[in-house]
Each structure stands twice: as C-alpha cells, then as structure tokens.
Image 1 (cartoon, one colour):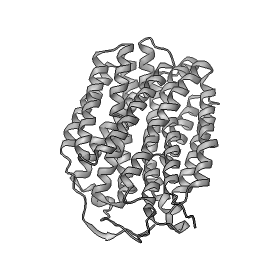
Image 2 (image 1 turned 90 degrees about the vertical axis):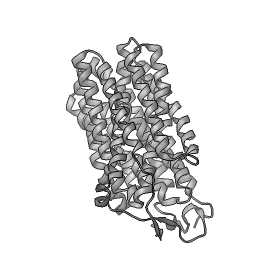
Image 3 (image 1 turned 45 degrees about the vertical axis):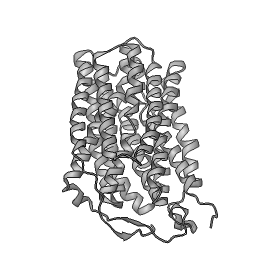
Length: 409
C-alpha cells in the first residue's frame, strides 16, 4: 500500500499520453505536401486517407470502451499507444498509397481510439470524484501541449530533413516515452493499492444515476449536445488537416502550418485553463455557446481575409475555441447521463463527432481540388457552426438525480 495518493501521478501520465496521442494524430496535414511532391498523390486522395482515420477512430471508440471495462485502462492505453508508435514508424517506409491508408488510416486510428480522450477520461474518473472536473481539465491540457510541441516539431523535421525522419521521431516518442510511463506508473483503480478515490478516507461518494446507451439515444438532450459537438468535429479537423496546405497555397513555407497550429495550441491551452476556472461561475452550456461563436468568427475571418499575416490572427482566435470545447461537452454528457457516459454513451457521441470530422477532412480536400482554393470549404464550416450555436443554446443543463453511492471499481 502506497502512503502517498497516486492520483496526481495518474493525471500526469494521462496528460503525457494525450500529448503524444493528439500530437501524432493531428500531424497528418503536414505530410500532404511532401507526399504529393514525392509520390504525386493528390490532395483529395490524401484527405480520404485521413477521413478513413477519423471514421475508424470513431468506430473503435465504443469497442475500446468495452475493452477498458473488461481489461482495465492500463493495458488498453499502453497497447494502443504502442500501436500508434509502431504505425508511425511503419509509415516511414511507405512507397505505395495503400500503405498510407493502412498505417495512418487504420492502425494509427485504432491506437488513437484506445489512448485518446475517452480512455484517459475513464482512467482519471476512476481516481477522482469530487475533484473530477478539475483533474479532467488538467489532463486534457495534454491535447494542447502535444500540438504546441509536436506539430511545429513535425514541420521543422520535414523542412530540415524529410517526412520519413518525421514519422520515425514521432513514433519513437510514443514507444520510448509514453508507453513506459503508462506501464510503470498507472494502476487501474485506487483499491488495487489500498487507496480511495480523491485520496480520501471516506468509503464512498454520492454520484449521479447511471443511464443506459439505449435510454440516452432516446433523449432529445443527447442529440442536441451530440450534433452540436459534430459541428466541432467538422471544423476542428478541416483546420487541423488543411491549414498547413492552405498556408503553402498562400506562399508560406512547409513549416508554417506547424507553426500556426502550434500558436493555436498555445491559445487553446490558455483558453482551456480559463474555461476550467469559469465553470465554477458559468454554466457549461453558456461557455460552449461563446466558444462556438468565437470559432464561427474565426472561420468567417479565414474565408474573407486570405493572407499570411491573417493566418496568425486566425490561429489565435481559432485556438481559443478549439480543444476547450471537448471537456465541456464531455462534462455536459457526464452530468446528464452518469457513469456510463464515460464509456458507451460518450463513445457514441465521439463516433458522430468523428463521422463529421471525416467529412470535414474529405470535403476540404475535394473542394480545394475542384475549385482551386479553400474558400467554399471555410464558408461551409462557418455555416455548420451557426447550426452548432443554435443547437447549443437549446441544451438544458440538468443532471440526473443523485440516488445511490459510488461503487468503487
């Protein structure tokens, strides 16, 4: 039995895991130009591979949730992170298009499903109840820091060396750093080492009633929150995957896209901390409406003001509204539907999110190929965000009744 509560180290490892997982999975857009230059693969085809990644990730979210329930988060997260790292190293060997589809479109996506936001949220939630919101917010900042560090690193490696080197370095980060930390530090439950959630001596905490997936799917509130979240997925991945290529279209260097995404990640990290503090005094719904509106303004700016310096302004404004949306939506769904929301219900919501993310990636590439620019794609993103704002205003924040004690898992 450990005397010092292990929870803070669990949060540190989930932060590190999310750094690697999101950092790697969101680098794909920076490989578009070098892959096109080397093999002649056009933007539409490469966008389709990333769309496959998005859909595969979404499909495997509920599957990974069931595996976590059966085997525990430690084994699922560690093996998934190893799969991501191995898939990136294999990507350094690609010479055929089908290899990119397999390594990035399928294997990386399966790994990401098992070591991304959902899996780490489940792990943190096993260790915290009273401080859950705060610790999930701290853990989720890994998504921003991973982008802040790994996206510019990817651009720099591609510009100074080649895309093969970038793939290998990114893969080794997961295999040499992330996987060992998960295996050495993580325990599935506090009871495994004789501890209590939150490090307290109390034997139980009150918690919200558990709602089944079938019940949630009949709920108007679930679909309002999920479809609003879907507009986030479309616009988030449209930007992340196509901003580097858009920067090249405007005359920027191959590393500019990574720099811009890094700036957006820094702005997102600051916004994540601020929104985490504001949840104490504001409803999550109201914060979500504000963030969707900020992203809407960023997309309008991008559509009407194409130019290099305008991209820097966009990166800051867009970054403010990027990743903070995720923990807010996760919190709203968790508040409404109870502990199952961290598994099957949240997994289904993420699936819808990823279907729209895949559409955003594919349509961005398709419309760029058909029209010669991204203007129509950006206006489409803006239109969807208007829909997202309207839907989010309809959310009613009301948790399910507290009617039983938490059973220590």
